[in-house]
Image 1: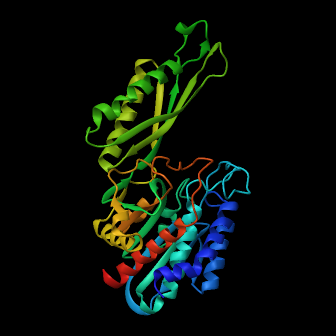
Image 2: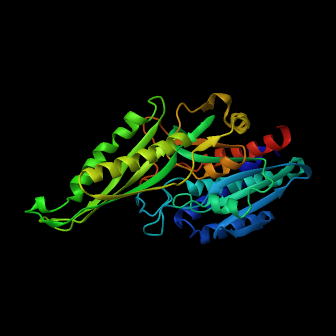
Length: 389
């Protein structure tokens, strides 16, 4: 049987698994039921695995009948802490939890890829590792799984993301930087509080923090090469407790998005200098912390070549195209791509490109048929790399 026939063989069961995961979503490092659903299916197929990696992660292994290289396929399992629109076709049964980014599909799609490849063991030259990862949406489960050795012996890795702004039945690839480093910052401005009627006797942290927000707008426009992309967003500004009290403290938090290590360091450095310099000019003390999160996701040219041709076999060359610009979103698949040649592919789920599906939104929903594209595409990537590359 070929990949298309094998996908049909498992289609209804994989859809049922996706629905189950969607109805009982779990957030980062709490994916106990989800990992149980994964291992139940692996047990049924007779695919060996190790569970409890990075708390709730699972690593399954398919050994082909012929010797060869090792490829890793990755899917993330976690949901988001938000409520789902009750009118969605499949609805979460857990209040405050929702699969609003497609990870239920990533998990079920990876299981489909595993089922296909397990049935093709006789023609596999090498080993396939299936990485079911926790906590992509929060602190990141990829790095702790790597630290527990899941990349040992891996020669190449592939991952996919169901993508709401791309038309279903299509896939997108990109050479080089594909997703940004999503760093976080916190700026604490300490002044001297007092009565709102006597501001001359205080050091107002709100005024100082407001000027810091304004001054930070020059970081991208005046420090980053205009041919390169970067984002500095102040997302929260908290201070004060009453209308007639000047507070002692103001706290700003936000995110920095960059597509190179050079700009990552540059923006963090200028943010710190501006915050401290402006604060000092207003007589306030400033503590600026930049918390490094995931690195830039940089695809390997060699791995992209494999993925591009693999997905072309599944969808047709006319439906697989190069992405014009990288996303400023972050992805902890970047840790894998730092260590082994890797490709991360977008699989379209939109019915109409003029009406994209918004990720992290209560109405986020997509058609089950896209599971097949993701699963078959990952399986083809593994097969082509092991047998032809």
